[in-house]
Image (cartoon, rainbow, N blue to C red; front, side, top):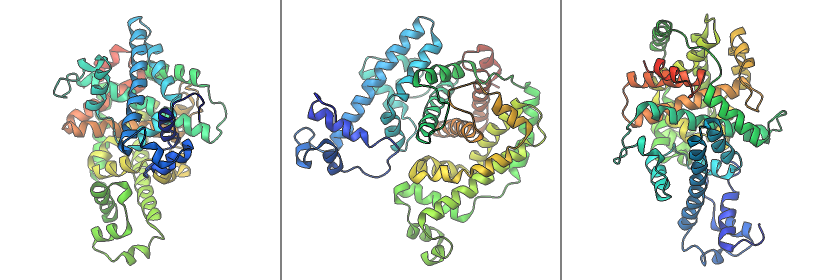
Length: 409
């Protein structure tokens, strides 16, 4: 632990130290005390209850966020847009414990709580986005904030994973922050197809999706258990009860709960990737391939919303999603000249590009947008309009005002 630091701060440091990776089990006071080198009883001299430690963690995290927002605003006021974005990226890259702590809470940002915490710290930059009652004032700006926030968050996670697996040629934190900020500002450097062509693709993808079979009973049972008990509450007994089966019948097919969950997710990921590959077949440009990925994902989530609930709850738990991604399969279905050329032409963000990393980004921005839009009661039509804005930002960046005008239809 750090020298010259108060015991109270050492306890907070210790609590955060468990978040080098997502944590989905309860961290005990005994574990925290052992990390600090004090007794469990000594913690209560500084925190009356365990919840008080979590509150202190939140205060520290939001104090840090508020400070970086102040630096960002100063950059924006001086016309330094990319530098402002770089400040946010650099902050997260160098505070891994905050990123993993947030992910471990198994939630998409509660905008109301986030805004309230910043207002407590005299930062009211989001007042132009949210009304006093929490409703959205500016849908375009809201979609942009979802895109920016998710892109920063996901690429930061990707960098952590690359560092953990000793991936070569990773940029240092400052260079990575600058490069990712430039990607957000300028996009991947592609042209957007004409509106007529996008409409043709929309019709084709929608027709293909309508022919797809419903989810299996087992996957629906898993979604029901996750919805009712949370990810930590998944058991074979509960799954069997939802299916109206004896648990022995599930054990005859799966060795364990983990194996069942992994198998169900993997099968559905493979099915979704198969739908994307089918929709990409015959496309002749990188831009159309990107649109096929994003549009198919949204169509899939609208048709099978239960899968979103499962994935948003299970991300990080025992690396379920990572193991379910089936890298060899992903590489195979995207073994096309256009997809390979697309990967090779991506801007340098300080991490070697792979199909899995790009797909992880595309998946995250669409599923995050879907969760937010569904919570706000968006119609399918409004979701598709939001997707086109998101697609435009992916291709040409948030700094291109012409993109905002074209992307809104």
